[in-house]
Image (spheres, rainbow, N blue to C red):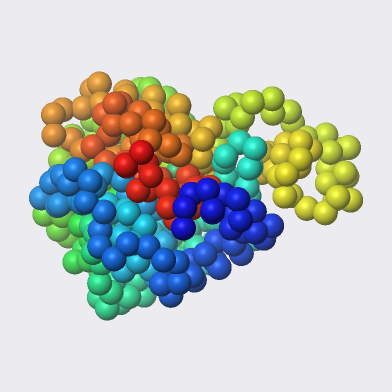
Amino acid sequence: MSVDLYASILRPLAFRMDPERAHNVAMSLVQKGLIPGRSTPLEHEPVELFGVTFPNRLGLAAGLDKNAIALNQWHKFGFGFVEIGTITWHPQPGNEKPRMFRLPSDKALINRMGFNNDGAIAVAERLSRSSNRIPVGINLGKSKITPLEEAHEDYKQSYEVLQGFGDYFVVNVSSPNTPGLRSLQDADSLRRIFQTLREVNDKRPLFVKVAPDLEDEAIDDVLNVAVEAKLTGIIATNTTIRRDMLPGLAAPTSRHISNSLLGGGLTGTNGINRNLTANQQGGLSGAPLLQRSNEVLQRLKANAPEGLVLIGVGGVFSSEDYQSKRDNGADLVQLYTGWIYGGPALVPQLLQP
Ligand SMILES: Cc1cc2nc3c(=O)[nH]c(=O)nc-3n(C[C@H](O)[C@H](O)[C@H](O)COP(=O)(O)O)c2cc1C
């Protein structure tokens, strides 16, 4: 299937569905192997980093295959690696629906999923039975019911059961959808989490994933802790709670709201609904995030010691976007929203334009 075919036929059909329903249908098709793709991983300038061989540098970002249900499928679409999760110690349903929204005219999504996932034990069991052809990263988060002061224990429990199944591990402290989570990006909390994980296993490659909404000084603090704790690297960035990168966004008025209620839902297909949707609470991803996530990457690169691995993510839709991450210092690149808009043929096109 070409990118054009997806854009002209399948995407319009999928985009008529509620976003989360479309996501579930697509995941089920991928899991069952019903979307055709390659039989072998896409080798494009393969690279070895932290002892792991990547067939190419472009991976699937966390959040799409949260529960590792389609692990043996992702190489078919050309991905060079896949990050599963976010996984928490306790299984949890996530926030109330609706919690995923499209902004088609901005090539963006907003989500407040809230770490809906099967929990570390169930995912570990699934991983023990699955086969994968490309490297796998495992992204860990804090369970909603665990108090922030006990976050390190929560990450530790997940890490204990999952440590044998990943090529790298990510401490996610940057989702905007778990109350207080992002406060764990402060230096003391981070130190405590990594110290605890190191006690469990100090051999596995560890990353921290940061928010694009950190001030420059806070980015420097995370970098210092990463170096001090001998992390393998940093993933930049998660979604943003800012909206100022959406052009012409006005706060919704009561007229907009009543129009939308009469007009039937938040489809994001006209100006009124676009503004209402844009004001939904949650993390914004996709094209509007490219610039800010690249700025964070650039700052990290400027100050990082040689050898610290940087994974760039946010707003990749084209080969130029991919190259911009590489130029700003990313050793590896990931995407999520671009794949939703670009479809299953996107990755080979980005790598081999
Ligand atoms: C619906 C949705 C769910 C996501 N869930 C997670 C998650 O569970 N953990 C995580 O670290 N990032 C999550 N992300 C963030 C992505 O991994 C990525 O950092 C962000 O979307 C920016 O990349 P993009 O512009 O290519 O989408 C999610 C993103 C979306 C759109």
